[in-house]
Figure 1: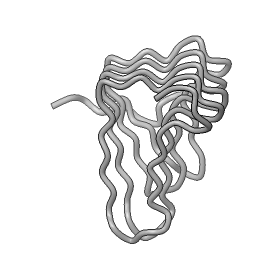
Figure 2: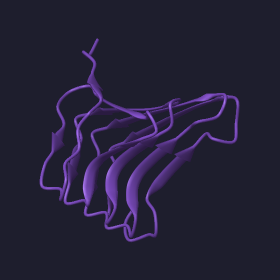
Figure 3: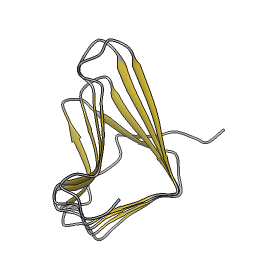
Figure 4: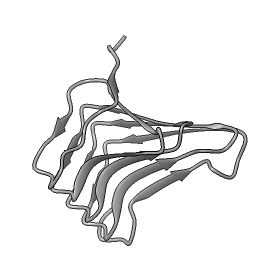
Amino acid sequence: MEGNANGITIDGRSTSGSTKTAVRDSAIAANAAFGIYAADSGGGTTNVTVEESSSGNNTTFGIGSSGVNSTVRVRYSAVTGNGTGLQIASSGKIISLGGNSVRGNTANGSFTATEAQQ
């Protein structure tokens, strides 16, 4: 997904159910705003897994999570060349499962936690 206004948006704010999304073997690049964005402050939960993918050269951020019910887990992925690599807002979570490279962004940001792989 390249050269759009936004990359991939997973928005659970208007639902009370659960949203589960996987982004695998994908390149999300050169979007005017963000690469991957998950949001949920409603009554449900939004869970996103990003595996073996890259989010790069997006103007605003590479991967973002907003809202207490929003969780993004990242494994074996690269986040580079973005305005901010990892963007967390309103108690969102971006968790590393290992093997990631977050480098070369204007501000890299950081994972909120690390989970061991099973």
